[in-house]
Length: 316
Image 1 (cartoon, rainbow, N blue to C red):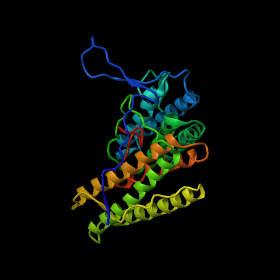
Image 2: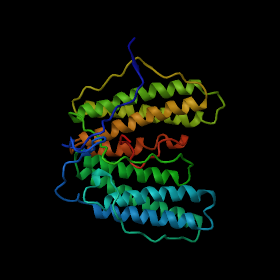
Image 3: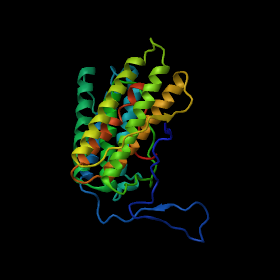
Image 4: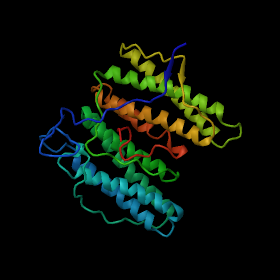
């Protein structure tokens, strides 16, 4: 029986779509990647900027409300992610993910917790939906950029009422690398799904019968199996042979809640990074499917407090 070591997917840090490493003998230090010049600011940047600022405003307003309670700090951190997105979107080349000067948005307060949650959910939904449309209308790394923003908005929606860990910050100039073909990228996602199903089944077997995580892990396992089967069926409709997976995978030694958490985090992170590569590699026929999958997969770790990121799926 063949075994594949669990290492997740490696997504390269690139200089850009066609960038190169530049060095100057007169300059000491580590050379910095140069992103190829973008002829114009990407279409939709102003729209996304406004939506990110609107979401930040209502998140900050809710965090400052007397009824926010223990959720206030988390909502402020979610607002900060939106503000950082806005700073990037204010620049001429947002794919660099370098902050610029974005206009500020006054905090928008609401009178009750119910109204506040509704307002935050509405603002984040508007950002997610618009950014998914931009992803579908774009191509390459730009499509993956919009899809990551949409995934981040969806993560924030989920985290409104769910404790999560600190967000992984974006790293300027680091990009998703497209695969050689859309089907190779999609099959890489399928390979990660096979691996995740195996790993989550193993994690489930290590949890005590009455452990509080068991129902959530069981739900995740069912979701991953459904995703796997759906992607295999989709590839067949496109006349592509699905990756069959392996009989077994070599997993890191796992015992105790902390190690189970690390295993789940690694599996989900590998899956989301593969999903971002799929978006960057996809053609018009499957780009929205890939973007939707990234949005969904980026939320799989949140019930365990895992996976919150400024740019889900990016190699940060």
